[in-house]
Length: 165
Image (cartoon, rainbow, N blue to C red; front, side, top):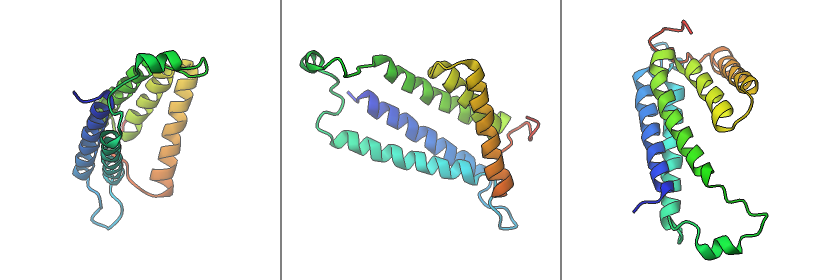
């Protein structure tokens, strides 16, 4: 039976493959030779796939892969040791949100989809105030826009709405 870690990395690998294929469909390079709107999602997808595969191999090679915490280890844990089972659930929520973000990117575009992802992760998953979540989401979108669109001149995927949002 595969461990939760292996399943999570497999899901991340699938998300990375999806982002890569989706990015390639947006064009990696413009006819003028400039970087195309698909370069960022495709490159991100390749990085996600590579890192996920590396982590999968690490888990498979480790001696305690998928064994969990034993009763003896739990009893021996000091009060300073933090055992946070809900943390694994939060990781699954973030992975699911990444999948939803990849799908939303086709409709809303990259920046709005990532902005929504950041707001939901900060507000819901990390349980910070919604004011902070919205502020972090807006700052993230503005910084990404300034760096990639304005500074580097990389056209970002706009989705079906064509940059309306």
